[in-house]
Image (cartoon, rainbow, N blue to C red; front, side):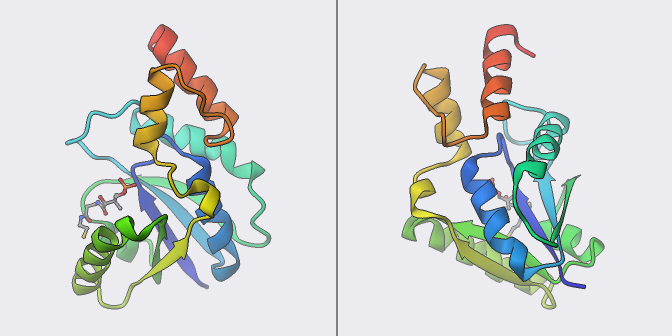
Length: 165
Ligand code: PNS
């Protein structure tokens, strides 16, 4: 049984994340989308809201026989991966600029848990500039983000900015 975790903040989920989930699905039997409960950041969505949105969107992703699950975690990614009995940590690389940070994280995670490998997947070039941070910024300033985030996430962002829910 090949299980991987795909850790991240997912505040919010973008089509770039979905692209990585889709690309990694033929490599694993199970992928756990692992939402970091990060107290340091000032998120737009709570961890519960992020998990809920991901759960709603995942059925729309074509992943063949690979099973997708969603969970949240606090603390170290390496510890969570070990708890989940995962053999791999999936991360997406959009551009060369991601590489240095990702390399440092992968090496640190390998030091913390030598039996778990980080698997890098190249995001589709159409998502090479898509990040959750940029999506929130453009959306909040009235710019168009359709095609870059799931529609359901865009609706939730609209509700959040208009009514605060
Ligand atoms: O989507 P992001 O914000 O780029 O994800 C970053 C994430 C969650 C993968 C990273 O911040 C992380 O692993 N945080 C958990 C704490 C940890 O394990 N830190 C050491 C990593 S070397």
